[in-house]
Length: 334
Ligand code: UFG
Image 1 (cartoon, helix red, strand yellow):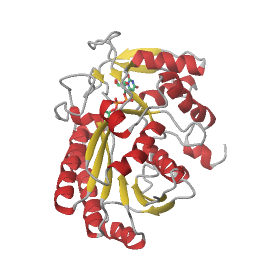
Image 2 (image 1 turned 180 degrees about the vertical axis):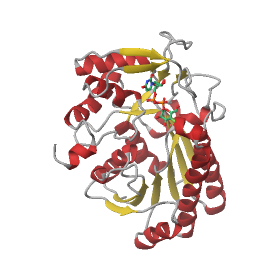
Image 3 (image 1 turned 120 degrees about the horizontal axis):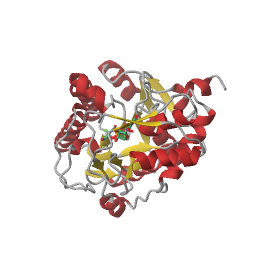
Image 4 (image 1 turned 135 degrees about the vertical axis):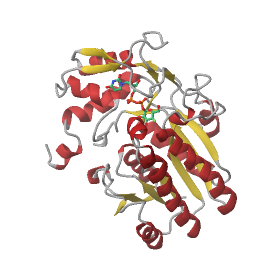
């Protein structure tokens, strides 16, 4: 049945892909975004865009007064692990307070379903890999802690207000929409694949590999890169499941690629080579983060359509090549 869904951060990278998937599934979508990190051009024209800040309780209240919301998908927030270790209170304060403002309004307006964009960063240095949902939670950054605090707050939203929730703990969101101009465009960009694509375009002189002395097969960090459209599909599917009960899922493809393997994929897909230098380890990085996606596959019937790194990189390359300055180029019709 079509629902009216409130998507916070719907102008951002994962949020905008999710909005597209929700519209394609027949839902009505209201996007709430302050457009500080997000891009107006990333919001699907069929969605209604409400520009506002979750820190502004009155603005949040107005959105709920204007629309009868059936469920919320919460993507908005500060998302940089490194920044969170320099400015922990921005994460532990603002990220958490904004989620509370949203939940307060949700409870007041009788909303009963909530999907949280969470992260594998809640596991810190995991006791085992691949990481299933029973691995101990011990965030290694203020960013991971802020998401975990929101996960805990959701338990009380369920207990006290009957708000059923899903926590989707993404591994490394990557790639871009295969058909529509939706892509990753962060300022500043810190992620491996877009930075490597910029090297392929000649926009950056060289790629830095942050450490090659990790206990992994080639010494560089291993991550589980999950395509952003597959993440979006998980959100569409989980909305039905949480009509009955709350649930948490780790969302990754269950296969890891090292930094060097990703850079090799970028070279293959783009047909270019670029200098690669090894620099010291980046603070907070862990050797290996790979999901065990058994629970989400069994309970949601979720299957990643993009299971290999070349296909993921190729989807991002298509738009990066066409719009090297991201949405700024798209807006000017470059
Ligand atoms: N890396 C480099 N050079 C770069 C950029 C990244 O070697 O210029 C390496 C990183 O050290 C890491 C890997 O590439 O080993 C992936 O790094 P990203 O910055 O692309 O992604 P992260 O794994 O650091 O972060 C992602 C999400 C976070 C999430 C985190 C969980 O972006 O939101 O996973 O660990 F919290």
